[in-house]
Length: 99
Image 1: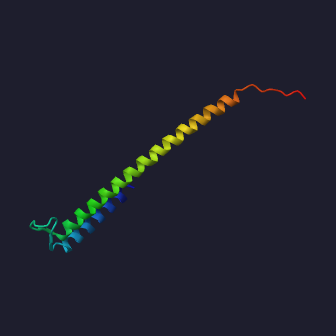
Image 2 (image 1 turned 30 degrees about the vertical axis):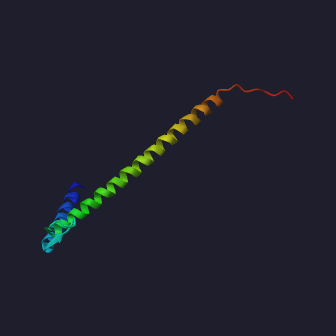
């Protein structure tokens, strides 16, 4: 399994290098009005955009995970309360009705 993982990583790295080699023309990025544009290779701009997108997605994932963890803790607490009530009810003495 480790060899397949290594081969897959090498193939992905080769694809990225070839992609970068074909996209080396420079582009001007204007990020503020009145500032001089920055000249960067297209490949670098695409990688930076991809990394920013990954970061934003990670932040959204973390907030959703925290919400789910909070809900799980609430459910566990409720389950614990119900288990203790069930145990208390099981230990109650049985009353026989006289008819």
